[in-house]
Image (cartoon, rainbow, N blue to C red):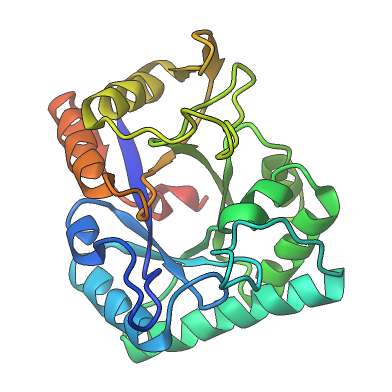
Length: 256
């Protein structure tokens, strides 16, 4: 059995530091690199791209709403023309920086509010799909496991990988608990690791109300901005590997 571990990286901005990219890159197999709209500055992005390439970590464009002040976590309703243009712009910028770093991007993972919105909003989902297809149809889209976006993107011709979140609580319906609610973000490395091992082996996760939710995912995210991110990622990888799983980029398996 194989599984991919991913994390949102390069989210520092100038003197404002976020997360520990170097430590996370030693653990994960895929890196979602901020593209400057919700976080990230060009010099830092370039540095992270080079570090990811040195470690053989797959690279994805972490596109978001134009929302530096809100870290891309505020709901927005841009027109289709605006959203398509913004996503194309972000992917294009990261492609240019990746070329300079002598590496390449292989997937796209939307960030924050954009990620959540397109999971269930058909119009904005279609805009993001259209933008990816316009830039590079070979890019894989990362989408919330169980969301309608998965079938919508596949019907449009994109390869899609379903994602679960290690450090987030789930509802009984398999949706993420809102960050506004208590207990939405998990911090205990041992608890998180055990939950994700069960998810990989059984396809289920314990929901916040104690019920069991079905979650079929091929990649697991540990948020880089979680203060316990590195400890969670290290413990998670150790437990998965000790249980016989191979950690590798999902892009190795997504095509075809």
